[in-house]
Amino acid sequence: MKQVYTPSSAAEAHMLAHLLDQNGIQAHVHGEQLQGAMGDLPAGNLVQLLVGGEDYERARDLLMRWERASGPAEPLAKPGSRFRFVAALVFLVVGMISGFALKVALDNSRFTMGDTTVGVDQNGDGRDDVTWIYHLGGGQPYRADFDSNFDGHTDLIAHYDASGVQTDEEVDTDYNGAFDARSRFDNGIRARTETDTDGNEVADAISYFDDGVLRRWEQIDHRYGHVVRIDHYGPFLLERSELDLDRDGFLETVRTYDRFGEVTETTTRSP
Image (cartoon, rainbow, N blue to C red; front, side, top):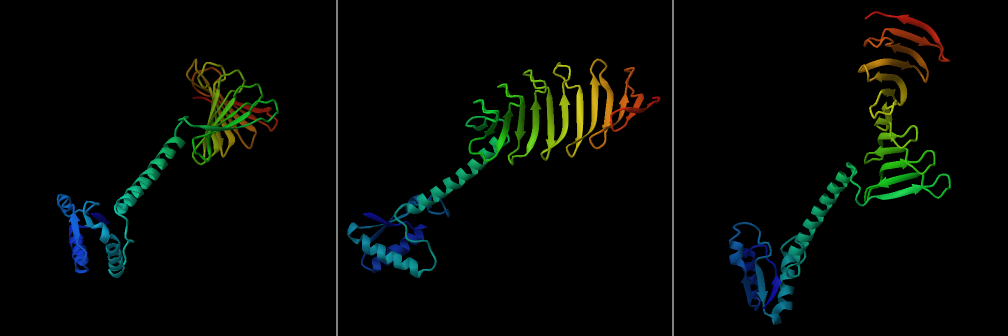
């Protein structure tokens, strides 16, 4: 016996077996007891319609004509091909979803397995001075390492989001191997920078930016635990300073400056 068709249910199998019988072809329904255990669920390739090998081609021809006459339907499949097609489709969809989830996870992490890099030698000394780092299969770099003074050591590291927009930055401002300044970016524009000016690994100077332009700078004296100076900037120029000269926690001295940075007025205020 040879499987000639995969019915959608035991009822369809018996109907088609009767159709073949009317045309002189003896057909057998196999697997209906298995489908019965599934209740009203689809047959799932359990029910088979079998015919003798000598009747296979004529039975196939009759069933194909029946499908065409019975309305829109999928082409007559080879035995088991419906199940294989559905299974392949399911695996394809699951694979696409899993791949997308993995890409999102990689793009939003510092995970480095499978990273690829692109380097640029700017001064022609045979060493890459800029290195762009990509996640496996990523279209945008998530990090870039810069050697600004061409000494062979990275002194600036920029981080990017999945769209290639910069999110933060680390800088070794004095090229001593320690990253002493860290900046945060909003929508790719510098918003805040914290700097360790005395080398104790604690930020003591904070710069605030408005649309990437410096507007305020604060100095913290950690011996006293508070801000001891605030500089206010206009368009690229220092305009006014507030200072705590006696370190009592109150910024009592106010200085204003001209466009050349010279003090034009000094006042003292009370708490």
